Image (cartoon, rainbow, N blue to C red; front, side):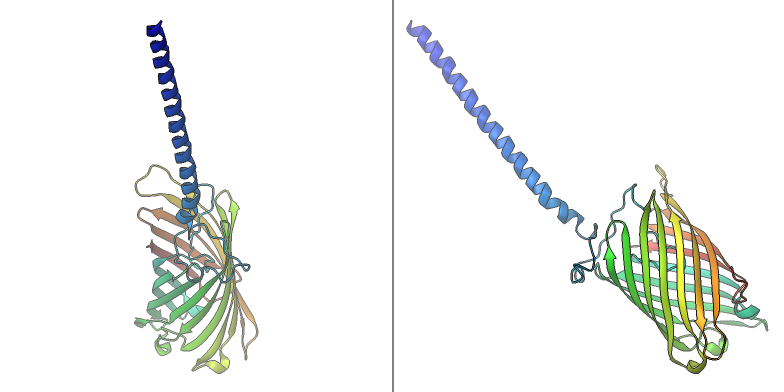
Length: 315
C-alpha cells in the first residue's frame, strides 16, 4: 500500500510540475508576443518616417525641419518620375545632365547645342533648392560659332500637400543673366517667376503632371520691351516594371504638352504650344536615361524642332 501511495504522489507531483511549467512557459510566450506586437507597432512608423508622407494645409507647420527621404514605391503605385521639360511637383534628390539640340532657333537665326547641369536638393520634406547652369554652342546664320556660359536658374520650392497619391508644390524662380547676349548666349534680362505644380497617381502606374507659372522681368538691358510670360504644361506617363534583369529595371513612356503665352508691351499677345513625346529608362544604381523629340504645334517660328537627351543620377 505504501509503495502504491508513493507512486501516486510521485505521479501527482510530476503532473503538477508539468502543468505549472507549461503554464509559465505559455505565459512567457504570450508576453513575448505582446511585446513583439507592441514593438512592431512602435517600429513601423519609425521605419516609414519620411517615406510615407502626410503633409497638408492642416499640418502646414510640420515637415519643415524633417530630413527628406526617398519615396516608398511599390508595384501598385505610380512612380514619381521626373520628365524632360515640365516642372515636377514632387521632390527628388538628384544631379542631372541635359543635352538639347535646337534647330532653327529664333526664327531660323541659329542652331544651338545646349549643355545644362542641374542639382535638385531637398533639404527637408517641405523645402527644396534647385540650381541649373548652361553651356551653349551657337552656330549663327552667318556661320559663326559662339561658345560660352548661358543664363543660370535658381529655384526655391515648397511642398504644400503630399501623400501617397498626390503632390502639390510651389516654387519661386529667378533667372540670372550670366550669358552674353551679344554672342546670343543669353537674354541679359533678370526674371522672377512663381510656379505651381501638381502630380497625381491615376492608378495602374499611370500618373498625371500639370504645371502653371509666370515669369516677370525685373531688370536688364531690355526691361522696357521685355514680355511677361504665362507658362503652362501637362503630361501623362506610364511606368512598366521589368523583372529579373540586371541592368534595365523599368521603362516609362510619356508625352508632354508645354506652352507659354507672352504679353508684350509693344507687341501683340503671342502664344506657343509644343508637344514633347519621350521615354525614360530606369537603369541600375538609381541611374536614369531619358530621350525625347519636341515639335511646335501652333505653327510658330520660335524653333523648328528640339531633340532632348538627359541623364539623371539619384543620391
